[in-house]
Length: 149
Image (cartoon, rainbow, N blue to C red; front, side, top):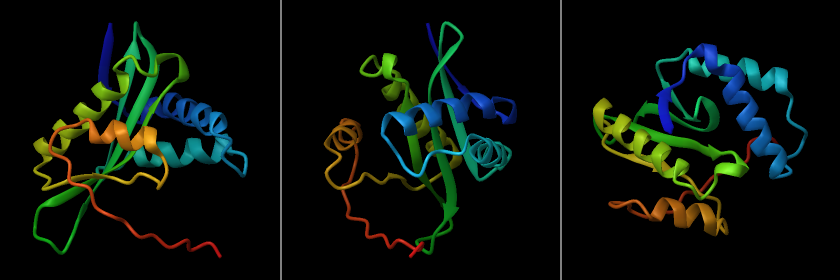
């Protein structure tokens, strides 16, 4: 049975493992430094500005989602930015991602956020279709600049 739980600092190894598995399956480069990501994820899990939820199937971690909270100049309410919905290969297309997404949407509502946003890379039709499947979305264009040269 699938269970979605808020992740704590003690779960940093689980989240890091799922993240690295995903990064390697996508061929992300440079190679992922597990020790560095383990430290970063532990720090984020310990922050009140971030929320991670982990999906477990029969106790086994099979996915996670992460969001961050921030204020904007649009008002005094927080906004949420979904930064990841990652499901292990074996459990994709089985509803795990949907449960993770709904959990994050509910967390944003409980926190009083005026909006939950997710950025999808141009051309990523699979992720785009996934996010568009949730009622109430508004599609915008984000423009980003690389700062690393």
